[in-house]
Amino acid sequence: MAELPESVDRDILEGRTILAVKTIREAQGCSLREAVDLYHQRYEELQAESEPAQEAARPRVLRFERDGSLVVCEGWQDGQKPTE
Image (tube, rainbow, N blue to C red; front, side, top):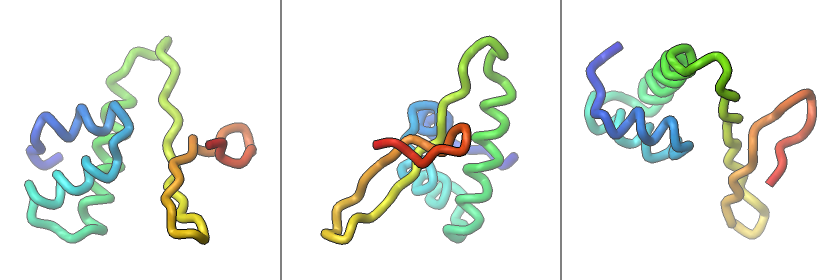
């Protein structure tokens, strides 16, 4: 894994996905796709490092509404749709 600022780990752990991806892009000078791939790679590493007894954080889903507003939903779990 490429060297990333410590703020990326904090942002990932606290669910600030967009900020983490933005910081990765700035630090690595890479494309959005590459930054998202690095985000997912680091997310998996951080989850593997966390204690097994600790409940894994559910991913967040960003959704644009028809009125242009952005809604952040909790991720899919047990085959159910995300909840707001």
